[in-house]
Length: 251
Image (cartoon, rainbow, N blue to C red; front, side, top):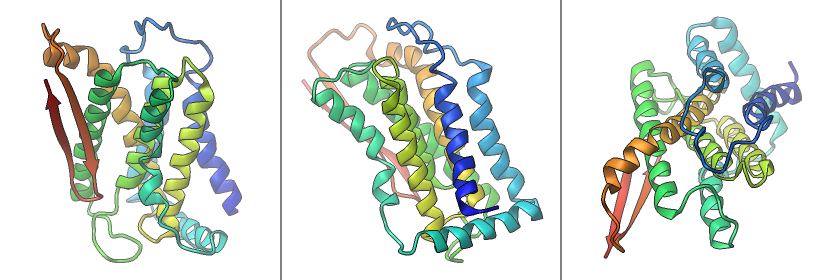
C-alpha cells in the first residue's frame, strides 16, 4: 500500500468522525450533547481495536514497519511540530473566544470539560502503556502503545469540534487535520508505530466525548449553589509520561 493511500485511509476515518455529526445540527440548548449514542463510539472503537489487535497480529506489525519506512521517505526531515500541534486545537478554542467567536460553553464550563477530558485521556493512555509495554521504534522504552501525543491531539480536536460545530463545521475539520499531522509526525520521528497512533486517536476522541457526557453532573457537583464572583481556572498538562492538572482560583 502506498503512503498516500495510508494517509487517505487515516484522513477518511477522522473525516467520518466529523461527518457523523454534521448531518443534522444540534440545538444550541445543548440538550442532545450529553447523550452518548452508540454510533458515536464506532470510529473511536475501530481505531482502538485496530491498535490492540495490531499488537498481536504479525500482518499488522509488518504493516507498521512499512508505514514507518514510507513516512520517513515521504517526510525528508524530522520535525518537532508534533510536540506543539497536539495543543493547537485547544488553544484555538480559547483564541476564538478571545476574538469574539463564541463557542458552546463559557470559560468555566469549557475549562472543566477540557480538564476532565485530559484526566480521562491521561489515565487511559498511561494505563494502556504500562499494560501492553510495547517497545518504541527507536528502542528507547517499552511504553509506545498508545501514542500520548496523538491522543492529546485528537482529544483537543474533538474538543474544538464540539465547541464550534454549531458555528461552523470547518473548525472541527481543521482541528482533525492538525491532529492527523501530529500523529503522522510521531511515526516520522521514530517515536511510535502506526498502531500506536491509531489507538491514540481513538482514546483521544473517546475521552472528549466522555468529558462532555459527564459535564452536567460534574458541573453541578463543582458549582452547585455557587453564584459568587469567584472564578476558577483549571489547566491540564501531559508531557508524554505524566498527566496532571494545575488549578488557580480568584475571588
